[in-house]
Length: 463
Image (cartoon, rainbow, N blue to C red; front, side):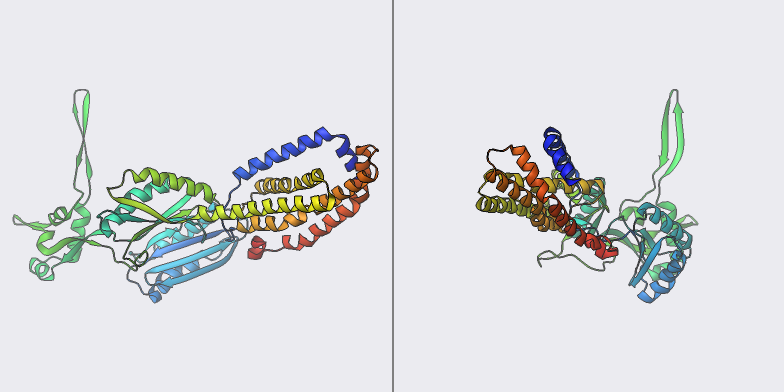
């Protein structure tokens, strides 16, 4: 069988060259479309729930939020592990599913259970499912620097300008905003004034809910034209909130400013962000969608930030301090460098030992051909290139050329022994002589790695 394969390859040289060219073009196309990241995706299909419970201690979060939710989440099909952590004002629940489970199906199952039990939570509990991402999805980090903006203004710029623009990019799951101060309107009731006016906190709360909104008031028609009428009641500043009516009796109007002090403030902070130990900063973290091509996502983010830079206030700039593409480029260069060194070493050693430059060149062609075939298979099976897979390819380069060296060396020796004989016939005889032992050696090498294919879980992904 091996002899027939050698004979076919030598008699159908144009077909073999065409197949090699097709392999090269397919491999180049696959390598350009292959998702490349710095790290392998080792996380299983996972759904995370993040709930905020302001003012609750870890014990209260555990008893009033985590336990009811855990009881409801039990029994979801294909669920393997469920973990929960209760912190101050935070509940973090993580559900792992079997390998191959569709992430959107898993999120639907968890969302249905969460909706069922959320009505039993305290009214202050908010939150829901976390974005479709993993622990390795943070691909881009930046801070907002320069200008005379306060921490509150920088956070508002990030929340209302930069974050919405970046979230529209393909492959971006979310943009986390850290640091700064989130602006709020604080209403500090005056207990003495409230007691004198006979007003309770519920009265103030109802006044805010009742008056802080815009309503439609129908249309006014005039001939063929119609005007849409609406009543504007939404508050925009402290003065608007202070002028809201709490109660009106005996031609006396009681407003919020009469019983409370309205002022600008910020949400309660549980931490802060500092850069280089020089004071507080406002940070944005771009989180990539699970399975997205990190290199493509980062390229899109860089282009969008360049566009946004022109519309920012004077003196304000976005400074990047972490870019995943830098690590990706280094990983790709590591493999490229290993290939180049291997090619150079193979050529030098073969020229030294065989004394034939053309034979050395023929053997060297195996290296890029093997790499391109690997990229093609990775694309077909939906695998991504990362630091470990590319590193494994670089390590395996030495084993790739073993068979080619044996066949080429034997062919060179036979051609030197029979310089006047037909070259095709000599090459056929030389290749046939070593075909079986060469194939056996390659088969043994492949057999050694078969146990790695049986590994499961985390070790299977890392192999």
